[in-house]
Length: 164
Image 1 (cartoon, rainbow, N blue to C red):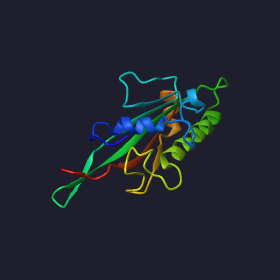
Image 2: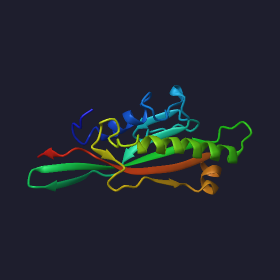
Image 3: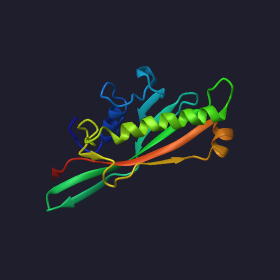
Image 4: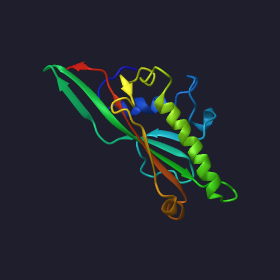
């Protein structure tokens, strides 16, 4: 998929995160992964009893140089929601399952060795800046009020340069 503008960046990243058969871990439960839903954008009524990843971006940055060259960068934000579904109600078991599921997300975001293009959808992902962050909401607050665990994964993707 070639970049057609800034409006399709979230859809491109969601398509990559839901890809199967590329040697990286599958994320969706329908393909053997741990997540029930991986979708672009946050819904009006979020799922409460499903393990979800919502793909968002919180900014579009445009770099210009040479009076004609432009490149766009997207800081992506994945909101990861993991309800406590264990029949025993064990928060400890669910926290470990959440950690395991987030590890698969990181493996997919980091991509295969030597290819950071997310299947050719971007020029590079997680390279500029070269950080991928996972921030956990304190379970002391999320378990009693939300009934589960929440984390945000943030990283950036760069589009190829364009003449503009």
